[in-house]
Image 1 (tube, rainbow, N blue to C red):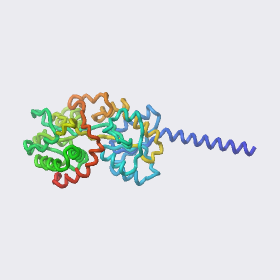
Image 2: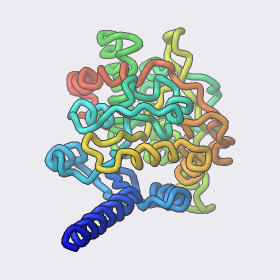
Image 3: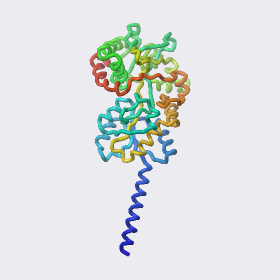
Image 4: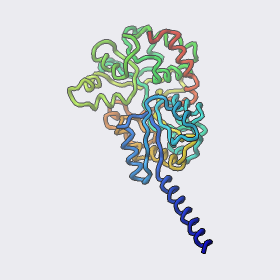
Length: 344
């Protein structure tokens, strides 16, 4: 009788353990630096499809430091951020793990993911030229920003902003450090105002007659041009046209992009669900949401752009240089910004 009772207790314990495991298997925890308004609809769609609950932790700053401090006890399963440099910082910081997924690899081009599966691009935003809409300008190379004919006509945000250090790093990868330093000095001498503000300020200052051209991200164009008639944002958007620059290097022929992306956390308690979430985020429905919700370019081919983005920017032909190669030069880029006094 005693044995029967003991056996029953054991079965009950196993059943309870299985129940807990099943419950845990239906959750995944996401640490993200992305805006809640953008990411929540995507996560709600994932939960509706998979029945896996997403516990979301929005981390404005210090994502790497937080995950490192939590160590093996971290509940994080997926780490999501913008900019390839930030993703590589997570990898270099030892808080990610490799993932092998045919679903991810078939969708994301090799130059837009870590070769070892440590990070993956989910969406793209290109660094393009905003130009006064009546300028007779149909093509542009990033190197042209230093042409003296643009003296006093260029607006741009701070050189130390990650969007610009990424572009400068790409320039180093293409043209070398010495040529990039000379280029950066030329761009600085062409500035219409101090390198500061945000990307939308470039369009604002073109409308205000302060400058004729500037470098900024694509998705702001969608936000501005889709704004309500009569608003400042709509006026700024309507004042510009977009040109997709390339590098002078003939091997490139593409436009520089920065990205949003994600990794599976090193100590992910729900690794399987983490991979399922990443695979969902590159699925066609999720990529449609990326395009519509934030005017970004989907990483998955064949997904329709937002109509405003399609009309004002169109499809991207991106620089084929691997983002990992570009990211290697970020520290050099930051040092050059200081060396030429770009932000002063």
